[in-house]
Picture 1 (tube, rainbow, N blue to C red):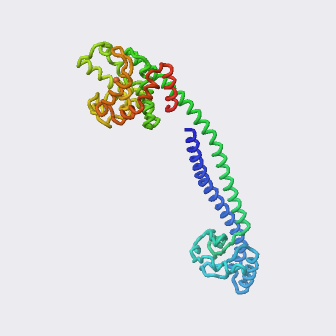
Picture 2 (picture 1 turned 90 degrees about the vertical axis):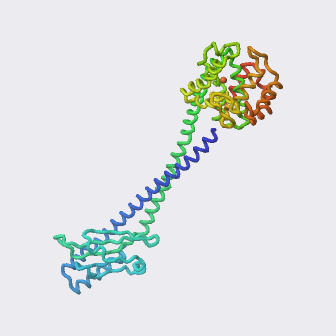
Picture 3 (picture 1 turned 135 degrees about the horizontal axis):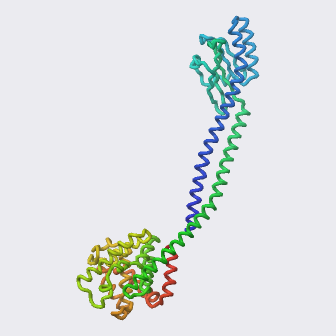
Length: 418
Ligand SMILES: [Fe+2]
C-alpha cells in the first residue's frame, strides 16, 4: 500500500510540476516578449522623433533646395540609426521623399509591404514585424500643426538591435529556467509532507478500524450470549471464512464484509424473544416463522451504521440455499451474494463439528459427507468443493483450538484486510 502511495504521489507531483511549469512558463514568456516589444517601441519612437522636426520644418517652407538639404540630412542620419527605411508623406498622402539605409536595402525588400492603411490615423502607431530571428517595428508618426491638423506623416521601419533582442531572450530563458527549478523544488518539498500526512492519516484510520473491530467483537460476543453460545463460534466461522476468502482471492473490501458478516450474522436474534430463542424443543411452524425474521432484524440493525453495511450480504442471505429453498428472500444460485454462499458452508460445517447442548460434535468425515451431500441443494457446489478440498487442513487448524489462540489468529487476519 505504501509502495502504491509513493508511485501515486510521484506521478501526480510530476504532472503538477509539468502543468505548473507550462502555465507559469507561458506567463513568464508572454511578459518577457511584451517587455521586449515595449522596449523596441520606445526606441523606435525615440529614433523617429529625430526626423519629425526636420520634416515639419520642410513642410512649412517646401522648395527643391530645401528638399535636397533635407534628403542629405536624413540619409546621413539613417546610416547611423537603427531605422532602415523612412518615408515622408504630405497632407495629401503623396510620398515626398524617403531614405533607405544602404546596408539594409536587401532586408527592406524582404519585409512585407504595406499600403496606406495608417494614413488617416491621428496618433503614433507601431506594428511588429519579424523576419527570421530579427524583430522590426513599423512606425507611423503624424506631423501635426499647432491647431492639431495633420500636415503630413512619416512611416519608418525600425530594426531592433540584435544584442538587445539576444539579451532579452537570454533573460527570458533564465527566468523560465528559474521558474521550472523553483516549482520543482516546491514540488519536491511537498513530497515528504504529503507522505507524512498520509502516514498520519493511515495511523488514525487504523486506530479507527481497531476501535470499530473492538465494537464488532463486543457485539458478536453479546449475540453469542443470547443463545448461550460463546465467542469461539464467531472466531471459528470468521477464520474459516477468511481462509476460504483467501483461496478465492477476494479483494480486501469483500474480505472485510465477510469477516464483519461472520461476527454479526445472527445480530437480528436480539429481536427474538427468549421463549423462542432458548426453547429446548422443536419450534412450531409459527415460532420458526418468527425465528426467520432475525435476518430482516439484522438488516435493519446494520443499516444504522455505514461501517457495518458491507456485512449485509452475510447477515441478510446466510440462510439462503443454492436451490432457492432458503429464507428470507428465497434467492437461488449465484443470485445469492458470494460472501453469503461462503458463509453458509462454514457456518454449517462449524455447527456440525461443534458440541451443542443437544448433540455431540460430528466427526470430520461425517461433517464433510453432509456438506458433500448438500452441494447444489444447500451449498454452491464450487464453494462446497473448494471447502471440502481444504476441510481437513482447516479442521486441524481451527476446530480444536482454544479461544485465545483463535483470537490471536483472527487478529493476524484482521491486520491483513483492515
Ligand atoms: Fe442465522
